[in-house]
Structure formats: structure tokens, C-alpha cells
Image 1: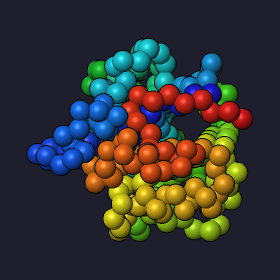
Image 2: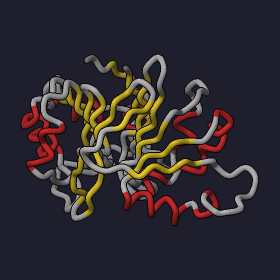
Image 3: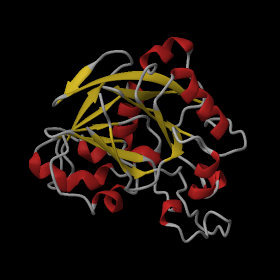
Image 4: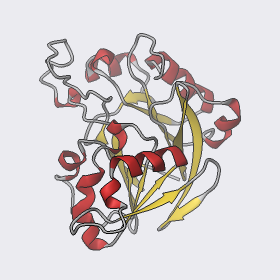
Length: 254
């Protein structure tokens, strides 16, 4: 199984519009962070983790093949604002989208024309599946277990897929949920910036969480320009905990 980081940035992306900070003015392509999303692929299955407003730009360089499912973490625009751009993939059949009840409702409100009784030709053909924490399901050859984390006071989903755990926008996690992440070989988790934030983990909080669950390798995502430059931050981190970058491809070993 391999994972491609389509985007590793926060809701504003990096560079941030109008900003002339040290990170936003960097010439290093590792410091260009589109909105957070990832693609998971095996020989027989292709899954998209979130579908934000940069989806079209992110997917264009990659082979045009069927997407077997889209896993939504939560109903914020930077995680589902690109859903209309899945239209070309509907030539392979309906797009199966998996989300919790809150995100399902958000999808219906954001894309009402996709779920109307009489849809006009060409709208995305979406099959919406309501999922719940701790209830496993299977897509192709991948077994998926959703679990719950807290984005401030909003419950959202993380996903355990084999030896991979994928979490974005977490601030806290209930101790009862930690068991679903513990022992994963690869952890992908959010780290917004250095200074505290009310609804996102800081860098120190992300590092502490990685140590808590004992991940072999941790990749940090959903980072803002306030995090700093990729090379400078990674030089201060241990080799097993690093900032990911857009376009990076990693292997997930079982």
C-alpha cells in the first residue's frame, strides 16, 4: 500500500494570500502546502482521504483511474470543498463517499443539486454512505476502521487502515479512542504551528501524541505558514517524526 500526500496545508494554504512571511516567501517547493488530502493505493483499490478545494490541482499530475471511495474526516470546506470536481471520475461509475452523520448533512447542504430528485445532466454521481466510529467497513481490498477525535468541540473522524492511522484537525482525543491508533506503524497527524491553538494540535502536542501511541514513523500534516519552513522544522525533529510535503509518496508496510 502506498500513500501520496496531495496536500499538507491548513485551511488557508501556504503561501497564504497577501502574506510576506519567512515561510510564504520561500522558494523551496516543500513549503508550498495545498489543503490537506491524501491518496491511498493498492494494486486493486484507490481511496481519497478528504476532497478539498485544491483537489483538481492536486489530482491532475496523477494517472486518471477509478477512485473506489472518498473518506471524509469532517464537514469543513477545506476538507470537502472540491467534491464537484470529481465529475470526470463518474465515468467509471458512482463515487462512493463515506462520512459521519454531521458530514453527510454538510454534503447535502453543500451539493444539494447532486441529491435532487431530478438532477441535471453532468452533476457528480455520488453515493453517500453514513458511517460511525468503531464500525469497520471494507472498500476493495482495504479494511477501514473509523474512530473519533475532537476538533475543538466538533467530533470528527480519523481512519485506521491496516497499519496506517490518518488524523487531521485533531485537538484532543478521548482515552477510549487511543486503542484504535495504538501500535500503528505509520501515523499521519496534524500539527498546525508552534504556538497554541484552540482547535488544532501544536507541533509539541503532535510529537507527544506520536510518542503516546508508539508509531514507528509519523508524518505531520495540516501545517500553516506559522509552522515555519519545511527544512528548518525537520532539522529540529527526530527522524521518525517529520513534516510531510505535497507530492510525497510513502510506502505503508504491514
